[in-house]
Image (cartoon, rainbow, N blue to C red):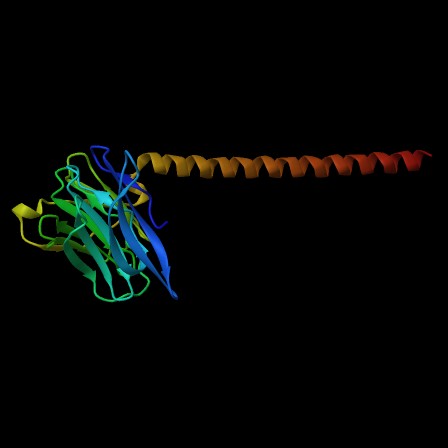
Length: 236
């Protein structure tokens, strides 16, 4: 199985992606099963995929979203949850270079889908879920995962080798498409993290001091024992 199953908001259906061997190629299918009797409601071929995200349902349960990397590029796809009809297929990367596709994230109103890829330099995209058009994109961001704040205003993106980013998730329906570059949050912006580092560093220094003191005491003890033995031999 390619993916973790996901259940529809009304608990009526479960969706998952399963791979099949077709000759030397491994093809993937998106399945919809009834949760009451386990019967297959529909299945959609996704072709030969290098990697696939877990399926994601809209909050109303009428749409499914999948990020897919194939031999030809990286795509975000939307399906009608009722019958598996492809609603749109948006190219987010035109060629395949073994990039890691991020797990899609959906805004609370289901109007924006965030998906990206982690091949350097990497990009993150905000997609209009109604028609599949790209509304925003963030450059030089090899995103692997992320989460939206509860008010949908900030997108926190985990990146490949570049730390954590906090991005302003501007409502794309109130603005034009933008390209944004940003800097990762550093340790100085996380007081608790800094304290932990200081505490760990202090602990290592203290441990080193204790170890050094133990070594000195052992040496002195050995020297004292040797001196006592020499004195004994002299007296004898």
